[in-house]
Amino acid sequence: QVQLVESGGGFVQAGGSLRLSCAASGTIFRINSMGWYRQAPGKQRELVAAITRGGSTNYADYVKGRFTISRDNAKHTVYLQMNSLRPEDTGVYYCGSGWTYEFDYWGQGTQVTVSS
Image (cartoon, rainbow, N blue to C red; front, side):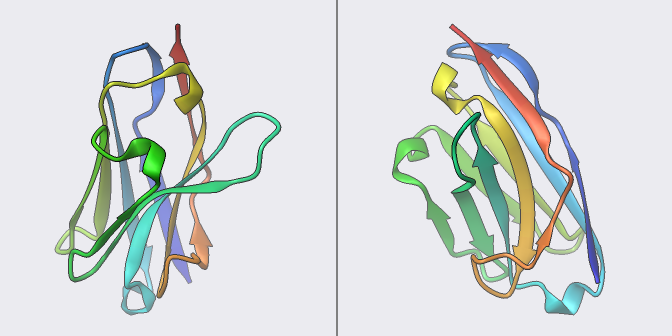
């Protein structure tokens, strides 16, 4: 099993920045990809950004140029730097991990609220 512990998130005004962190523990060898999905009220969970152990990244079109995902393999931690936040970025952000971008393990979620 893999456990994921998220930190960061919170409340910010439009145009502001937040940084999310997610630390993995447990059977780390099962992890190649780590990243973030988000779920807005009334919507399905959707991929925000993901990164492989080798550093390959995948971003949703609506965050390209604003969000940056990074990873510290030694600490088994993934980060999401979110800049130029918009009200539509509001939602619960879930850290995930697995072998592909279709994650097998999930964190508990952290709320991000962007006010206009």
